[in-house]
Image (cartoon, rainbow, N blue to C red; front, side, top):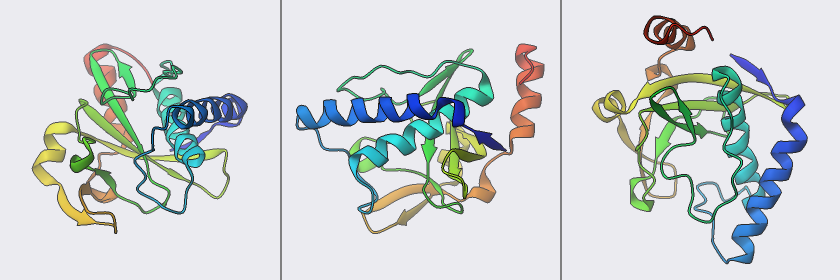
Length: 172
């Protein structure tokens, strides 16, 4: 599913700048996985993913600017905590870095990837924490071992939409 974030573009950029500035002024280093991106781009990409899933679920984005991170989840949807992962490669995996304390704490994770238009992203799919733990493989992308699943192992959005309708009587 392609999500157009043009209407949120200025806000996303502003929040990314504010978060980058706060971390820099407090000498907090971003836990980079990609040396080609600076701290601002890491914040921007994460926010693109969060805004895309928030738009899909019709939930608010956490715009708070804190030093302590997100506590293991980015969004809440009914009784579920959701982690959003943005991979800069359109074919990239959904992965967690347990060594840095970034491991799958939320109930669900969604993977978002870029499109050829910087203001549009693609939601690839989702997975439960339980399923992830059953099927992840250890991969090394050049920065040490990561727990990862490939895109073909993620569940498509149609199944999520139908499960939400049944469980919560809510239409996405």
